[in-house]
Every structure is written in C-alpha cells, then in structure tokens.
Length: 146
Image (tube, rainbow, N blue to C red; front, side):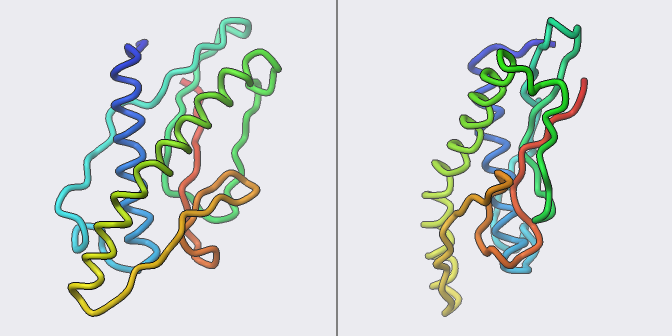
C-alpha cells in the first residue's frame, strides 16, 4: 500500500515524536508515561519500492541497542540507495527538528522537580541518535522487507 506524501510526512513526524519521547525516558530511566502526557503511536512505516528486484521494504524509526547496525541488503544498489538515503536523512532531520520542543519541555519538567536536563542529541557513526553516549538505548532506522 503506497501512502500519499502528506501521510508519509505525518507518519515520519509521529515516528520521530514517539522514539524521541521513549529515548528521553530510557535515558532518564523513568517510564515514558511518567514524563509525557501524550505519546503518539506510529501508524505506517515508509514504503520503499525496489522495482528492479520486485521487492518492497518498510523503513521506520525505533529504539535500538547502541551497537545496532543498519543493514541495507539489496538496497545498496547505487540508484536505489540515493532514494533510501534521502528518506533516511529526512527521518533523522525530523528527529533533530522535533528534539527542540521536547528539550524545552524537558527543561521545564526537570526544573519543576529541582533537576536539570541538558542533553544534546548526538549521532554516532552507525547512524544511531543518542542523548547519552554511554546509555544502551538509541534511536535507529529500521529496514524490513515487506
């Protein structure tokens, strides 16, 4: 099922919102529902059609272990990879964009509890995003065959 562009963008924002809030919770070792009133569930992963091999893939953002490595498999083909890379960059940039209001919320949340929240969102060489480099959980891009 192909999703219209506006729905794909909406779903990308939902993925970013969901995984960022869960990453904050993992980083602080606090249940996500104790921090955020609203954690939006994700709906549809991004569909990637690879016509040359008659395959389809789903791309999404999820909480992964820090040693997670994105496996591109057949998608390493140069022409296909450019499309995949563009979508990956879009997802990662969506996370970075949404981190600003979440960080502002977390600063106030922490201040109300006489704590501080000064985490910067970082990206590692394996394309995972993290708040604390030493923590085991991060945000990663997942590719699954449809």
